[in-house]
Length: 241
Ligand code: ADP
Ligand code: MG
Image (cartoon, rainbow, N blue to C red):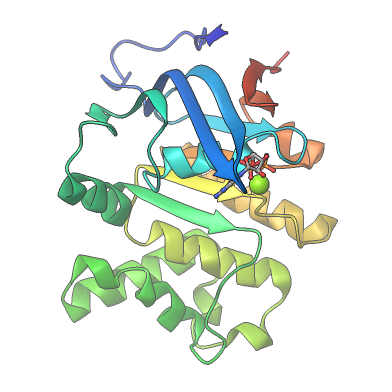
């Protein structure tokens, strides 16, 4: 199944390349001698600046797809293009650079270090970039401001609500100024009000040009996206309308 984004774009502002182009992507795992087809021929394009959600049943292939989009794994067959980089042809150094600079992850569990403050947790995300101290501090302050937590930089995770902790995790992810933010059930551990906090933060970042791909079971999250995809038994469908 081929899914092409039909949304018209303004040629004067449209970026030259989509964030992702996937063609004929399969992923097979071997589990205790049995072959599992996690992805079975996925064709999809994700535009730069888009906000896409991926829904679908457990085991449908969502996390597998997110790993490919994150350059954390390679397909068994087919092509995954991140911008103009084909994962299958990229060198280990190119893949490492993509992961360090271009792509950020947020997970259901916030994965913050409890003994560090919010600002220190965000700074951790910048370590691979080897920035000088002034640049690092400026980016930490900017990232916390973007998720509405300027006043909480010196709080430890235990002193923050779940929604605030997830916003710290988002700040840590965006501090490196990635092109893409990939999120796997980012609101899965949060109540409704905190979920709205996270969605508002994500929408602000998307409005500033960040491409968002969000795996979610929550249709309230999906209704806020510009484009909704569904993965079921390794096949992808556009369910936007
Ligand atoms: P989802 O995130 O939609 O629940 P996954 O992508 O995690 O789905 O899993 C898709 C299928 O691939 C499942 O059958 C799962 O058991 C299998 N799978 C995922 N990761 C691995 C792995 N590392 N090794 C073996 N099988 C895996
Ligand atoms: Mg999953």
